[in-house]
Length: 331
Ligand code: ASP
Image (cartoon, rainbow, N blue to C red):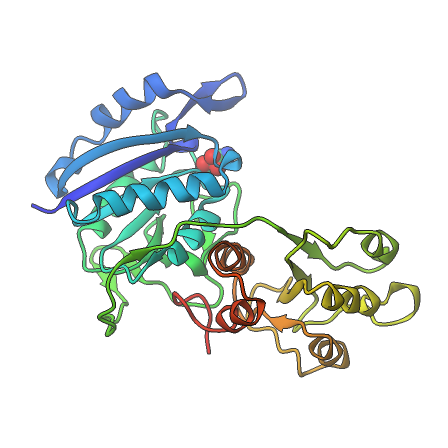
């Protein structure tokens, strides 16, 4: 039987009813997990590690580091890993781990639920069983398993607050679909590079959403001396206002002067940014901006945090950022 390490981090899956809502309930959770999903033990030899207990909105780069180091120290002893996690920032954690856990050759599966496991109508039981089963396969990457779908972790994004089908992967096909049978859609890796963990992240960056009438006065007053990067959520294929007082160009020029790396991603979920298509994008390229291609916001952000945390040279960071490091972008 395969050996799986189940790492607990909190989230709705581990909550109990509280008034009209839910809240974390560590005591109830441990009993519930053992009693309600006993058949997990038929799928694998499962060892459980409670790492932290948080609503995923309270997770940060320190938690990502802790998770990466936990997997590193247990890598040889286990065949696969299941991380139980809140859905709100699951795609951020999955993306962050996909960069920190380099050259993975074992499955790391994140899952959670929309309704606590302790509730009778919970989706947790199914997600747990599917995830443990996925962790026994020959998947060699960080994935999210939710509602019978398996997504590449750094391609997934939370799309629904109220539906059991909470995630989507706009620019990359499913890794697996679980129905009467399990349809795997993976290609074995050809790289023989060995597993390595680089768990540092640097949060000296911001995300800027462009919108009609964005007041650029506020942007021009920003202190850029400590800022290392900006992820711009632009319109369409990389567009932004270019005229009069609303023009973003003076701010982009100021960023270039301060060596702040500017990345363009899109507010549209599907397809890729193309900075050569419209005049605005071409101007952005002239002042040194780079394209986030078809990355999700979660991947675009965590990739930059990871590069800033592990590399000094801005030219190297820019080059690596535009390369496919962990299947997060299409060439
Ligand atoms: N707020 C919860 C969390 O992310 C939501 C969930 O787990 O579905 O921890």
